[in-house]
Image 1 (cartoon, one colour):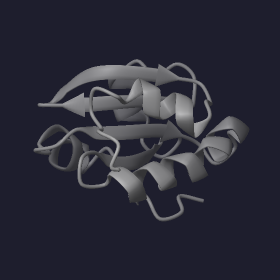
Image 2: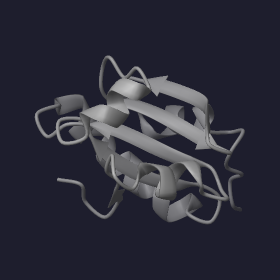
Image 3: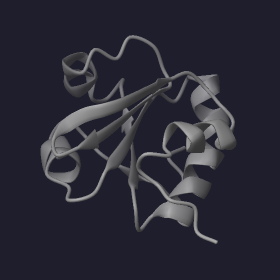
Image 4: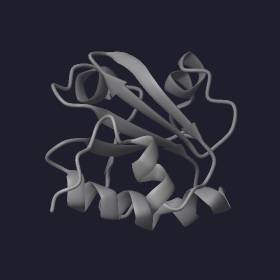
Length: 112
């Protein structure tokens, strides 16, 4: 159910997310999470539109509990934006695409 977004795991989280040279939004999700499935199309659309500016990846919390625990993910969906190896923004809960984009305005610039 990860769609077209790249999945990360505990094993490659540091390499893919923390060492990235551009901001990375990590969608902490689970297969059984209805709201996670609701926001998936919005995240895929944002990834298509703004992929040059921000990378969007998914992390299944059931299969990768170590990373979810390390970053204190208590409810899903949780979207963390990482920049320079640090969490610079946290968005909790399902929101429409426009609201997610507003939350990401420091990281993405709309293309005309």
